[in-house]
Length: 256
Image (cartoon, rainbow, N blue to C red):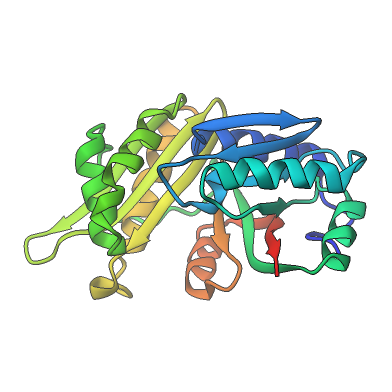
């Protein structure tokens, strides 16, 4: 069982994985061979707390390496999670299946050509660089735990490439939509894109997404990418309207 078709463009996968790591940086990153071990004690995000194997041929001593990683995760008070992309060794995934691991979430990685993306003529928003304001907006829109504010601020402050924070506010509801756009050379990643449940299906998502993509295009990016849970059909439909296409998927595994 594999996460993506055999025909996956592995050089593109490697590049998108690399920019994804820089766009959402973990506090601790170590390597065991080509396995990247990502941990962040202050935030529970799966992308920040997982093993990511990055070479299909690197599956030697799997049990020993998984055991070492499990101990490292336990030191952080976390359960071991493996993130499977098309770069993961098929031998490792079969081993996880045989050992009782379970796949519990799938996400699509999508990409679009910024020169040809059909951006709608919506109201434009300029990016903010106020991390505290953006974190407050993210927590409000996502109805997240306010105690995560310091962790989110630390993550955003650690992003090295140029970033723009986009916020849509209304007099009645306050922050109703957010998007983070991270420009890494000619690639722009759309992260933390969310719309409040109180204002969905009113075009606000299109408005804030178009603003982020326009900024990325003006800033010199040629392609935009994003990650979305595979069962989030409304979001995927929106991205397809903007010209995004799926290039691969990744899956999370944990011991049953």
